[in-house]
Image (tube, rainbow, N blue to C red; front, top):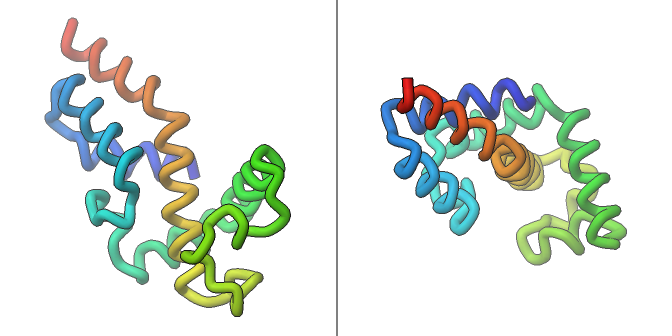
Amino acid sequence: MEDRVREIIKAEIDGMSRDEAEAWFDDLEAHGCVSGMVGAMIYYSDTVAFFGSHKDEINGLLANCLNEDGATCPAELFGVYWDKSDPLALERNNRNLLAWFAFEETAHRLRDEILDAIEGEEEA
């Protein structure tokens, strides 16, 4: 999943300076994928496919976040956005939500690595 997130981010920030890319990450953190700012994570067809391709990793990431937050279920983590009638994320709404969650969390972890690479390219 990390490689796919890295690939999507690189496509989004291609040609940006380090400062511009940093602003992109800031916007992602502030507004999330729900804002539509990540082209590959807009449509259900894309987000549900992302979820399907990375389900095990997403579930692991979700379990870690639930544990860290002391939450016992996704509804506690996502609030009103979580469809409680679909606790196993079998339907597209919760799969979409989990895809966005995983993308955003992974992007957050990759932020410094990607920004440092851009800075290195600018210095070269």
